[in-house]
Image 1 (cartoon, rainbow, N blue to C red):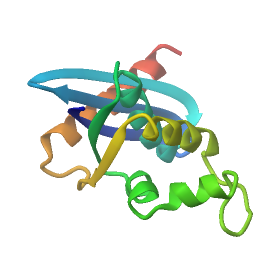
Image 2 (image 1 turned 135 degrees about the horizontal axis):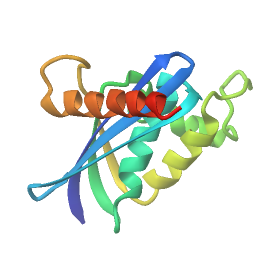
Image 3 (image 1 turned 30 degrees about the vertical axis):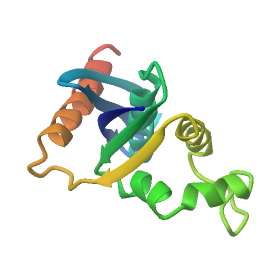
Length: 148
């Protein structure tokens, strides 16, 4: 199984507001940079979307080291929340609606194809690729706003 690295970040101008995501997929010295933006979203949705979009670029099942500054995204897997949400029919333990359930379901499906290893990085610090992803996300927001 190929092992790849995926750095991701999400951003929002207003929360909710125009949001952007950025990702860098790396394998054997090659990089693929990607980004996108949508209107009326949240930072958390963009953080999850960045991971999903990066994983959707993979053409075969891989082991993926996912680097994110989003505790929300990392902890969903590292603390097992996502498995409990799935068991409860995509609801929280108190039976209330799970926010971003559509994205969590998509990411869960992708996690059944790929072996994901989530690594939390400090945001807006000295991590080169986290900073690149942040720039991709914020640039996507600026470009989206200028196209309106």
